[in-house]
Image 1 (cartoon, rainbow, N blue to C red):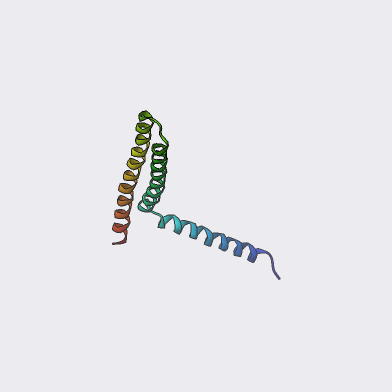
Image 2: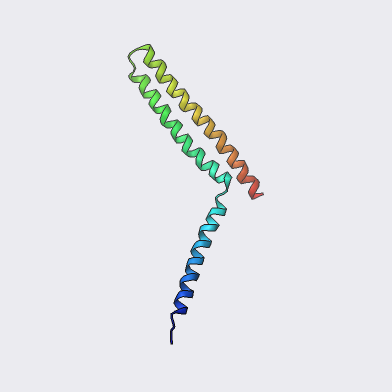
Length: 99
């Protein structure tokens, strides 16, 4: 005779396994990994700004527009440089964790 307790036990065990997977993923993604992922996103933003700046320079019709476009391109380069530094720091943390 099935009282339904077995079904509840199985359901609870399934939930427990799902939560263990989530916790394991959270442990796997350390601060070093987060830094690397954040750096990749920042690098993308920087690349986007650079592309806007270069495009505006190509389309510029006067010196003032060119200077503004160069400022946007330089900002993009700066963001990318920061992203590379952050990615390096994250990589060092990951390497230290794996030693």
